[in-house]
Image 1 (cartoon, rainbow, N blue to C red):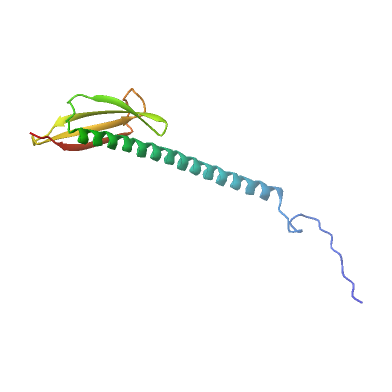
Image 2 (cartoon, rainbow, N blue to C red):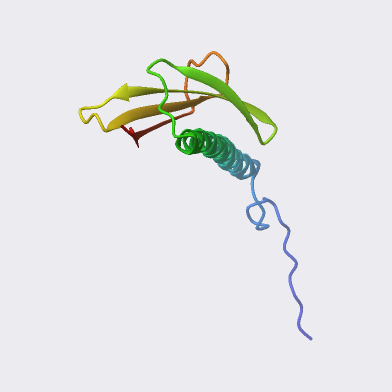
Length: 133
C-alpha cells in the first residue's frame, strides 16, 4: 500500500491563484480598454449622425436645383431664402447666381443650413445653368 503525502499550501502563488496586485493590474487594463472602446463607439455614432445630416441636406439642395431647372429660371444675384421640411425637420436653404466668363452660363450656389441664421452651411452645392437667350 502506498502512502501519499499531503502538502499544506502556504501562499496563493503556490496554489495557482492570482495575487491582489495582479487582479488590480488586470482591472486597470480592462478599464482602459473599455474607455477606449466606448470613446470609439461614441465617435462612430457622432460620425453617423453627421453623415445622415449631410445626406439629407444634399437632397434638399438637389431638390432646389431641380426646381430651378424645371421652372427654367435663373436666380437673382442676391440670396433667395426659403425652407423645406424633410424627415420631420425644417431645413433652411438659400441660393444665388453669379456671372461667369461665358454669357451663356450662370454659376449657381445653393446652401443648406440647420438654422435660419444662415451662419454655417451643412452643404454647399455649386453648379452652372444654361441661360437661354
